Image 1 (cartoon, rainbow, N blue to C red):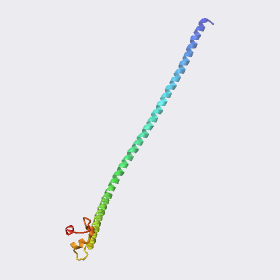
Image 2: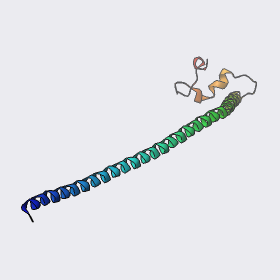
Image 3: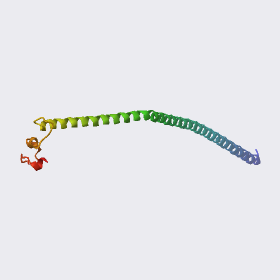
Image 4: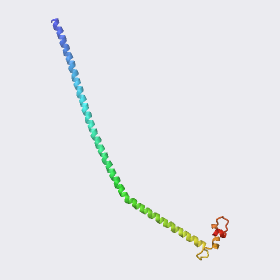
Length: 149
């Protein structure tokens, strides 16, 4: 072989090697781009799926809140007559209690009067009051006419 042929073969081989390396890099680069696109597509799909799930949950939450508001309104409407009845019963109970207290007080007053009216003439005299020393204001166990009045 000729020296010229050897020098010509070397650049051809180098060119072929360079081309092979270049093709391998291009293939690797294209595979990387394809993988990147695949990851982006999966990411978009997952994001879309999550957004749909979030929207559904948000809609469910809104529905539940609306149901809650409706039920609270119904509850309040139902409680109006209940509170009115409760107030009426409370008022009646207080009136009955006041009447009972008045009756008890009247009975006590009658008993005290009967106790003071020793001669049973339906009048309490000064003499009858003086017999009850527990009514003495100054605790001397004596009643003067001024104290009785």
